[in-house]
Length: 120
Image (cartoon, rainbow, N blue to C red; front, side, top):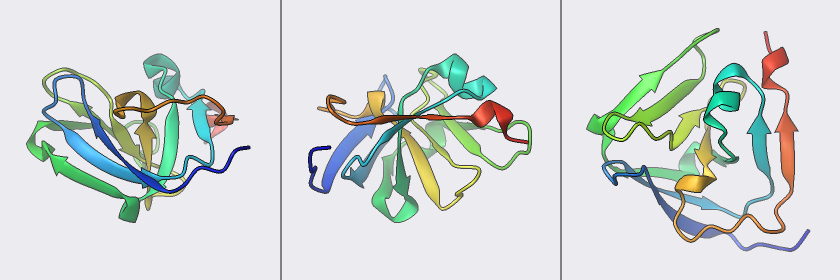
């Protein structure tokens, strides 16, 4: 795997009402097969809460929880896009939808398949 320096990325929902910033070196990307991730088809990078900053749009975020009500999935109330969620197993981390990041290229980054459907 090629070395990637720690870098800040700007992200947003489709309409731009929700904007955020993350800092990551993209050690890996994750796909999850739980019922919600499978349907939203997101590709995620895991970042610690200290590497995430919501820049604007908290009032436009809607939260969805299911099953154990531990993970917090956030969606824009205006355009419906899922930009990030607070993780279930590691609640001090966010799963960031990399398709919401500006100037992001997934080339060369390993993708790990998470087995979320088997979590109880």
